[in-house]
Amino acid sequence: MSARHRLHIIQPGHAQRELAADPALTLLQQLQRAGFDLPHACRNGNCGRCYAQLHEGETSHTLDQTRVPLCISQALSDIQLTLPKAPQWTLYTCQIKQCREERIDLLLPAGKIALSGKQFALVNTCSASAATLLEQHQRLLALRLSSPLQHTGSGLVQLLCVSANAEGRQPLVFRQKTLATGLSASLVREIHESLLQSSRDAGTS
Ligand code: FES
Image (cartoon, rainbow, N blue to C red; front, side, top):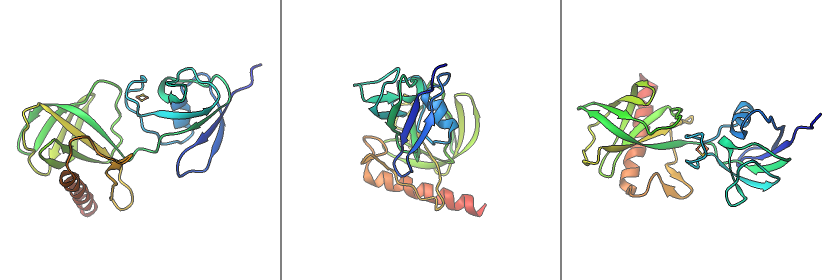
């Protein structure tokens, strides 16, 4: 009979926890089942969102022997990990399929993406707009815009999905970077305002 490896889990802002590893599941799957809220997108080790810091032990996959892609890895011994912070927002670069005054149809990037955010905004290098999800069919999304988006001619736009907290107020800063390279502070303020406004509208509807 083989003893199960133990996972010693550290997540910033939470008490440390310990659980038994399940060799039939990836670390991401078992941590999600145990109730951890973890950033993830591609589930194939490429996007980097789920990478954890390995302090002790051995896992099936590592980068630089210290970073563990949770979505494709299993524990090969007892391990100690620091998990990435729970997601507050995710940003996807999407292809614009069609854009009318108030409605925009987008194609999400390939990969298993679950839209978990409750608030949406579309941003490009010269404008931003709060958005409401109208419908989704696999990678195709239809959104209603609160204000028209200025065209940049690239055919691409960034979709920001934000998990609301109690006040609807969101930090739009991640590891000391604002949203995405190239976004100005004034645009970030505009997005923040759009999100606050859409959360007020949601609260009064
Ligand atoms: S979810 Fe993309 S690397 Fe793990």
